[in-house]
Image (tube, rainbow over all chains, first blue to last red; front, side):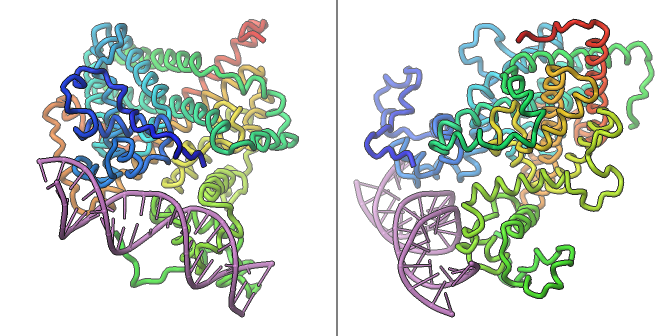
Length: 265
Length: 265
DNA sequence: ACCTGAACACCGTTCAAGT
DNA sequence: ACCTGAACACCGTTCAAGT
């Protein structure tokens, strides 16, 4: 479905900044791993992950699919690259004036808040890409949980240690924090996708969804208006605050009773 | 890769209980939506999601791929069925003597603990299937977050209301609980997959992973032994307990100050 | 050096045909 | 009624060939 034979839209990538455009030779060719990755992200954002094929991505770049293999070993590696690009975009301050670099200037609590908001921002900016973050095998599998961005893990651990967390507490904090972030954002992003796919994919059986007989589910029926409300942003802030409170408590308790009864080794 | 031409293993489904096996006619044919779904789950567990194709699933069942379309509208629908089957397996007590039915007998706290353990059990039993739970579009998209099992949402809401939670508090609890559960289990399951894929997919470049130069990541290097420890089970219990404490606090606060300053509407 | 054409082995899915 | 064969449009990927 959704044929687009009538309209050639091979200029999605033309939405670049413009500095290299004046060079003169970067228009149709100038293939490049980074350009391919950016095009892939744009394509996934526009058409969904399932729609991204090597052939279509090639066409989008004005080239045959086979040309991509000069710069990318294969489709799986391409997806890894997409995830890495999106995650790393946290660090190159792309025009965000406020929460500039993710340094640990304002203390660990401020850092965790800024990091959470940063990750949420990229998740909402690329809702169709974000699930990949959770499903791709990690860069360093021995890190539990593995987050694919070692740079982010490193930055996290540094902040917590600077903030006075013991080694064990820093690692425990990393785990609690990353599972909170992943869980919340994945659900939020799935919601976005669900709303879209209702108007998009099934093409007209939106009532088939509503006709799910809720007769057997009185509480669900009853609470539908509350359940349907989108409180994601508020809940995100509340959960984040709660997590910070918990971590702060752990830190203070450890300071008062100055023995290491946390874990062995 | 991983050719298995030498061994015909079309009897994966033969691991059924045995009552209908005595009927005599269920051996090679007897195709059936439920049988197909069970075979699909077994296949994903054994070979991963990416390896599941209609053709291979057909072969597994001793049939051409095209025969499956009599019982399943297509691959996407098949995957939905797989998710639903796995999630609903929570409710048919499949030989678990202890945490029997998910009724709200022991109060809502006991219920939440049993539900969490039940979901964790099926996640760990089908680690390759579980990510689908998070990525498939939900049955009722207007439920936020959408969990694909309306029965589970209904059961959850009933328990909380019985426990004295207001409508708003019950819905808020549902959201906090489901995002905790999803986040934790997804990370845990990803870890499992990462360990497996190291020995499985790349076929010998396990050192390529370790050779990721950690020189630029001093904290990571430093904390490697702690980060590599699998404390999933403990962390799961702790996070769950913490969530329950929080919910209990909310409930009591609401009882003491008997006004509804929670939300508007 | 960089891209293409043709080819290979595989997909999901349809449908007329077999039994 | 239930399954198959052949076919269609599409995949990812390889590789010799073009420029």
